[in-house]
Image 1: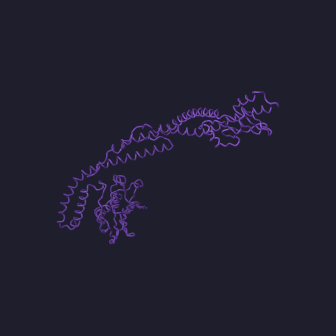
Image 2: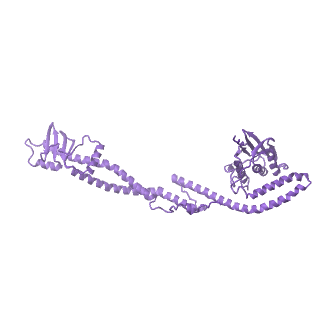
Image 3: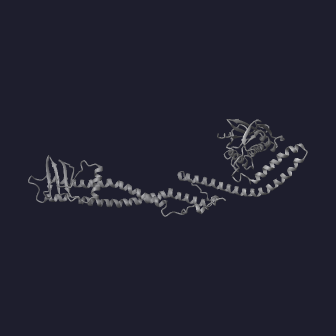
Length: 486
């Protein structure tokens, strides 16, 4: 009992036929936004570090102006309250500068310079340190103690340092980060939409059309109207469209051929039933020929009966090629010369005046093969040569000639069927041993060569078309028998 094959619905695994909830376009949009945001993060880190540096440099610049005021002050100092106003304008608790080797100090109180949370020296700060300090200022709460900032000075001052609270700096950084986030979101959205529309037009849309066409073709692959019409695009998508069109055309043709073969097999099975009965009746009548006194008839009668018996066996097997499985060869030691001579008589080569025949197989050459199957191989090859010579004649005005040769080569038996006819057309060589595709003669089906190739493969041998200057030469190689294990 043959196993029941699952239908198409059972093997489809319930795949969705339409667009999924998160299709290719949506995934592309999300990925574009994520990548743009990642780029913005990479830009944000140096940006916030640079903003912090500039913010501190602005305070140092204001402090330098205060230092210039100190340099121009009279010997008895600034008026009362002027120092506090300078410090409030700078936003610092204290300003110190070294001018001409002397240290000048403006301070709101008597706080010692060491009473600070940390010192930021802008003169030797690198980018890595600047980014780290900026992130620390953003993440960590502002220090209770002020910080000291040291920077380059202009004019006659050697350097300028200020003592400021960290809270205003952190507030400025948070405000800058918020503004940068809003700008980044706007840029990311616009960039994502632009990239999405461009890629959707150039890539996603055509891919959707390819997917839709594949699903439509799957429903009815034999319908030629379901084959995709490729565009003139010169990129990879255009190549994919053209490759898909070629594949669909090939597949549709193969399916039509297989359907035709199935219908042909059903018709042959019906014809075979009646043909077997007719051949059986012919065999019964042929048995009476053995009782005749005619020597010639008595000589041919056993071969006729054997041929009819073989034809009945073929019919009983219901066209073995149609079943896609030949019987396993029963190997015997067969005299190839006698087997070739029998096939030549069946083709009428002994009496034919149009085609000359030469049996050049050595009389002592014995090959391990199935006699019935090897007879079919020889009959198919020799019949093809006779048909080619009869229809097209020999080349260069020569007399039509068919020759069968055989030799032993390193234990294997090599058999050649050669003729001096028109040869095998180039268009037929690619599918030479395929049924219904490798026909050489007009109106032929190509079954003869296909059956011969299958039978030779069952023997473990090979069949090829050898290159030749004239006609066609088919080479059949039968391997040497395996030695039994001791």
